[in-house]
Image 1 (cartoon, rainbow, N blue to C red):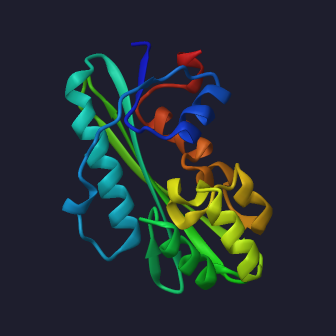
Image 2: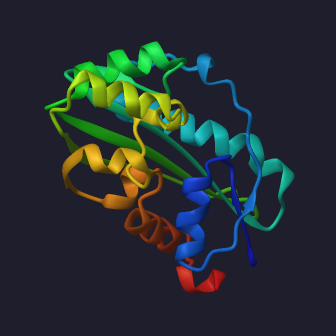
Image 3: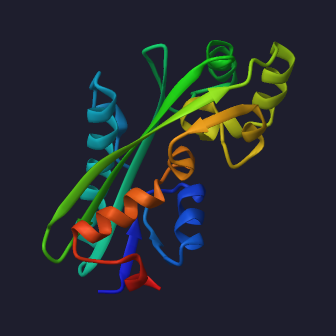
Length: 194
């Protein structure tokens, strides 16, 4: 087995995989996330990641398929991708000066054996207390519209994050240490994909 499939259209996740030497096939699951309505954040991201991987897995024999899903929770409220700029601005007004937890669900399926491993990475993100003019300028770049939690740590949004406690890559959308452990749980090493 040499194939690795990323069941996600996220360029940030693909870039992380390339960074560690995995040349993944990208196949967007197009899974309808509105079908899942869970209030527990870990259950939500793990279920969505699993559904995305399960949707793509039948298409690729002899492959590992990775599905991921991320959300941000601030003051008990769950933030996925904002639908428009007004929502992104309102979210940033709630997030500024606070700590949020970024949850990323990971589901890895071996399509030969149907073995599946599911894990959630959780990272604390401390947001700068920025004023409305900075929030509006950032949202006007449209970067926040493409990201869970309305910010991209690896982009312009990184300048508005004061501190991170936990896995840095998890905030970008894929915990590399967690992926390494999940590969090992399925009897692989990351080096098998170099």
